[in-house]
Image (cartoon, rainbow, N blue to C red; front, side):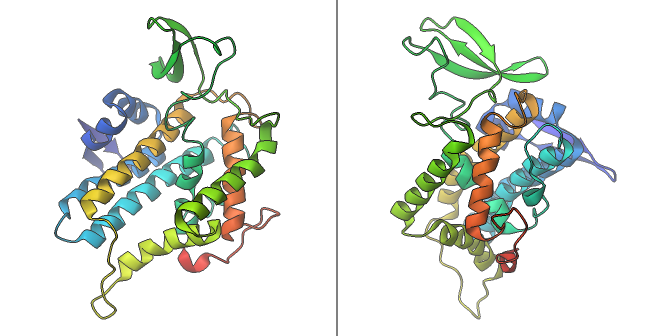
Length: 295
C-alpha cells in the first residue's frame, strides 16, 4: 500500500507494504490516520531505511546494517515524539526523551521492550484476566472505532469482552507495581550475562558502538566483519520493528488507566533504571554525559 505524508515543505508518497506485512495493513492504516505529523515522519524515515536496506544485500552489507539500526532508532524516536506531545497523560519522561540524539538512549529501548514482550510483543497473551483463569481463552488486538482494544475470546471463538491493553500491571508472586522493577532489572541483567557474558552497561554501550563501527569503518582500518549476513539481519530486525510498531500503536490508540499505574508506568520505570546502569542518567534522574561519546 502507498501512503501520502504531508509535511511543511512537501508531500511524499511512501510504500508501506513492508510494515503492513509485519503488523497488518489495518494497523498501519490506523497509525497513519491517528498519529500526528511529527510521529508519522519518524515512522516514514524508519520505513525508508528498512526498504533501502534490502537493496544493499550483496552490495554494501555494512551500510545495510546501519540502515536497519537507523530504522529501529527512528521508531524509538516516534515513540518519544508521542510521549512529548502527550506529556499530561504519561509518567515523567522528560529526562530521557530530551536525549533522543544519544544512540545509547535509543538503542536501550528495545532490550527493555524484550522484557515486556510477553505482554506487548505477543499482545497480552500470557496473562489471565480475572474470571478467566481456569478456562480456555485467546486474545487479539482489534481496532474499536478510534481506539485499540484487546478482544478476549472463549474456547469456541466467541468474543467475551474488550478492554484497553494498557490496563495491566505486571506482578511477581506478591510483588506489585513499581516494586517489581528491581526484579525485572535483575532478570534482564541475568539474561544478558548468560547469553552474552556482558554486564548490562557493557551490552548497551556495545550495542550503540557497533553502529558507529559499521558507519565509520574504512579500508585503512579494515572493514567490520558482521557475524550475520545482511539478509539474516533483516530477518532478525523484523521482530524488533513488529514490537516497536505495536508499542507505538498501543500508546496512540489505547486508553491510559492512570499516569502512575499500569504497564507504561512500569516500563518507563525499568527503562529509566537501565539508562542509569548505562551511565546516561544519574540515580537522581539528572542527565549524565558518561555515554556522550556514543551520541
